Image 1 (cartoon, rainbow over the protein chains, first blue to last red):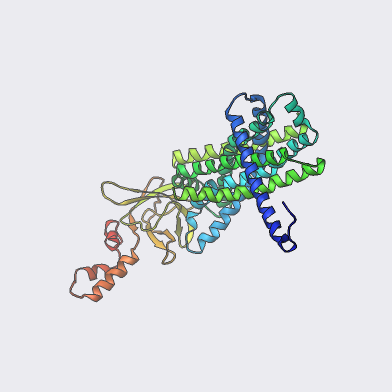
Image 2 (image 1 turned 90 degrees about the horizontal axis):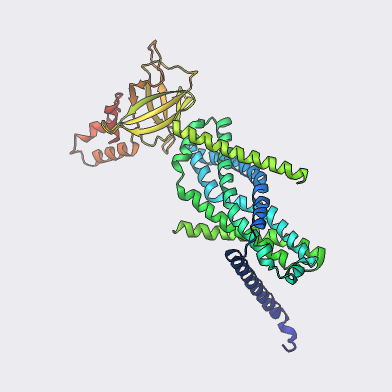
Length: 264
Length: 174
């Protein structure tokens, strides 16, 4: 690398940021690969996995449930209004069910998990990095990928589909509540229409999405925490980056997966 | 465990219980197939765009919903189950008619109460029905009859009002 002519400085800046982006993408993929290898091959740490399943999954139930019930209720009102414009209010239960199971259930559960879990993972692992606990772990020949990263990845992949299922049910319940209390829908007919209309694939495709989103959420938390630099401020930055990148990747992944499922 | 975690555990359990409760309720409802009010049935030659969940009204006021639609495999008539408000007892000679709010969809059932002293009980059948009118079929037949007047048989049938008896009403929809 010689001296750069003055006029080319902006171009080298573009090149540098492009190469930087490429390197980050490569680093994330390598990191993900190491994480996946760590959780498909022994030794495992089942105690860690159990603790993460409870921490990531069970303690996310309140926030996921609340999000789902309000979303289902608002969705029901909006679709009722929209359907009313061409005399099709009656199909509201079906559209609410489809929207929740295919799209909103997985995406909202994943976003809640990104806010709650990605940040927590990044802060926790980032703090361990800042206080040199990860280096100490390596000195004691414990692979941090097996002990820290793999249990979190596995737990998030297992837990988010379960949370999504709960979100689907509670979201439809929220729509049902609004429809029967304020819109004069027949409770039994609402439920029966939903069951008759939903196909297995509507729910299953949402759960597949959820598993992918779970991987994204845990991966972003672990990656940013593991590569945190610069002490306490670095930990804060890692948490922010984890949430933002997880949210963006969830939306991008959602579009890609939906395209894949639509042209199946 | 800290006290805060106990609270979270409790709320998590409430969420799970709510989900399980709604799931069990919905499975029971689907299994039993019963609504809240009393259920009567009506046979139509043609239901058109009527779907389960559609409104059942008397004088434009909603008194119930369409609980289910099935085909009678013997007579090829549509058997529509109506879930009606128990506060509104209807005379047994009432007429059920499938109408729509506009040209596009919105099919619902309008009931015109009769004058009989006895009322429809749960499980009874409404005898006087009038099926859906296939507007596009009517328009098509009218245009065809105007274009070629050499076909006298179809024109009167299309212009005749749909019959008030169950099987006769299918003539308009065919």
